[in-house]
Image (tube, rainbow, N blue to C red; front, side):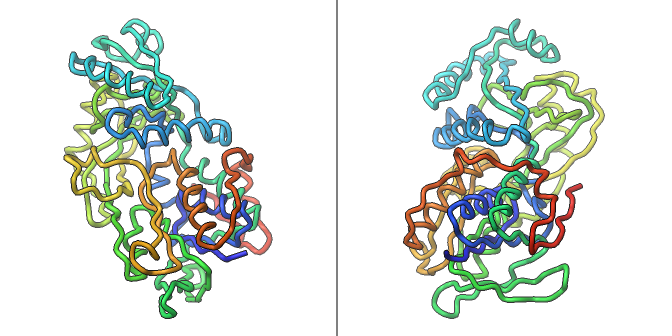
Amino acid sequence: MEHIIIIGGGGAGAALAHDLALRGFAVSLFEKGDLLSGTTGRHHGLLHSGARYAVHDREAAVECIEENRILCTLAPQALEQNDGLFVAVSPDDEVYGEALLDACRASGIDAKKLSAAQALKLEPALTPEVRAALQVPDATIDAWRLAMHFFATARENGARIHPFCEVQWIDTRAGRVTGVEILDYKTRKTRTVRGDLVVNAAGAWAGRVAALAGIDVPVQPGPGVLVAIEGRVTNMVINRMHPAGEGDIIVPQRGISVLGTSLWLADDPDDVALPKEHIARIIEMCALMVPTVGEAEVRSVWSAARPLIRDLDASSPQQISRTFECYDHKVTHGVEGIVSLLGGKATTVRAMAEKTADLICRKTGHKIPCRTRTTPLLTWRRFFAAAPGDDPPRSLA
């Protein structure tokens, strides 16, 4: 079978390596840093029900609820299936809630309308000003464990996983992409790796990778600040019942709570600034839903760049769709042998991989069905047992 080179060791690359290995392809994945050191290892850990996008981004909402159900079956070790609440704390929120309920139902999302008293019974830490709520099947992801389920299973099926190996050049001299040049940071040596097809799955860094092949892709890094506070202030995921914005989500993660998030657009995915005003605004806005947020000790603050698909018609960054696209650059740029996977979310990495692997099958003349919807995943712990021919894997701190 053909040899497929994947560039990017985040969730999308992990899921794609798993899918392609199941279909019988030879797979080599290269990541310039440690696995999951990009956006995948820095998001807030929400397994979306799709409700957040149901009103203004129906396509993304449907993708999320479909993948939510699949991952709850395939990777229960990586999830806390704790449900979520959208809470109204103003009259405008209540008005939006009616549209949200209708949109959830139209998207196939199981949403249950609750009174203020019912919401407070489920989550006593909610503000006493809560007016109504909507219960949805959100869940909490352990961002590292989910991706490592995919990596472990992919490697068991023959995929070769290479962290700390940066792609520095993509060979297009033959009129098509035929391979890549790798700098191995462990040995400080470069080597050429030949492949039948290269997949750019570098997330917010996909623009840099594509440029190595002389290609421009419409990826738009969207950094945002997240704040972790000490203590688990709620057991369910809490969202503000209004159009998706900033400072309107609280995600419980073990003994902490992650508050999210701000959003701005940047040219550089490494623009990881932590504006103090963003931190204060996130805490203040989340405290409108759960007052104890404002009293909690801040444990850590960080920034991560979303891999958004550029949309010049969007009225605000929040209105840019969270769906994903797979680009065959033979079609878009006349460059054969390279594909780019852009956009998406942690919730939809399996679906992103399926769509990309389907394209690869079409390009290579194979009719091999996807099996990742039902094939059991190995435990994430399995990755940390050495595989034949691999260096012993590093533990993730």
